[in-house]
Length: 195
Image (cartoon, rainbow, N blue to C red; front, side, top):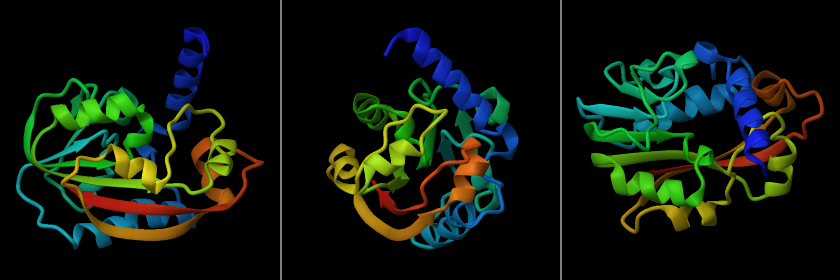
């Protein structure tokens, strides 16, 4: 893919991400991903006083962890720290990677884990067993979707699986998220790991 096409797709991604309103849609999928599942996952861990929300965008996690510091390079989302997470050098007792790894290629994922300066890391990531359907629905964006097995191959060996759930990615979600009219509703899995 040429640099021009990639830059064009990345620009579109920012436009469809909805800035400070990202993830606040009222559809069933958004409710599960950005509200209900987060409560369930956070019940599985101890949340310390020092939390870095890597790629946390508009700070949705603050509904549950008000003191979390969001680090993101998208100024439209108004993060606490405007910086690429691959360059961030802050120290946190807990680092959270919530729906971030599909923005990174495999090498960047491994680089991020090696650079994070956190006592513990919570990874929350959706996975797809049918990547063909997921990529079909991925218009207007450029991402790296993975199966559960592909995701786990990138995690540090000490990663402990603490949550798994399945939900339906609805047409309404894709309409809200990517302004798509021809999406295919499909099942998706949600995984959480503590490292």
